Length: 196
Image 1 (cartoon, one colour):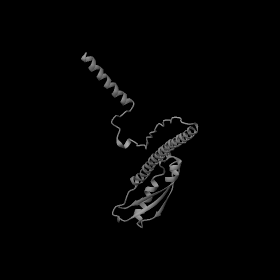
Image 2 (cartoon, one colour):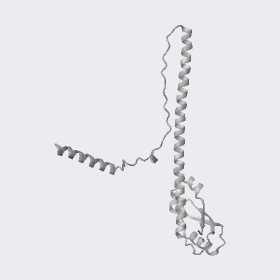
Image 3 (tube, rainbow, N blue to C red):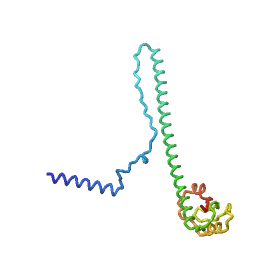
Image 4 (cartoon, rainbow, N blue to C red):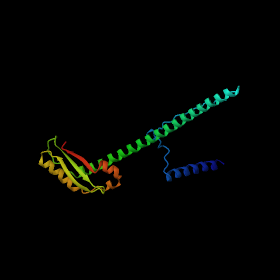
């Protein structure tokens, strides 16, 4: 009997593990960062008991006042529901905007890293040199042109930057960006090189 119970529990936990493994369920992955709080308001309605009938004229007045209270209560409820959904929509838009900004920053960092990887920085330079470059990129990821906006005044430093800029002809990962995000952030891309 004990062997049957032990076998059952071993089998149960083994199957639960395999199920969570195949369906990518992580029971420890519920951190506070992943919990999104939504603004929720609870509405408590008070039931209105009808008043006893005394006379017909008063009854008409009571009915019309209770109807207006019901309409007011219904309007308040609809207003709260509309407010809830507009807040929910605003929060969803904010999360999408943060996600888009994060993706844009990652792509900008990739572009910068590729140039810095290929740049052979000259040695023994003054620490205050910098060059600002404007890079024009096509939606296909091809580097169309670059323009040095301001030179450092040090020919060796400037030439090393031009050589690095000439080495990259396209960025394949640019193709995955939405057209709107591309036009807004990467059609023309500023990059700065500094000697320090």
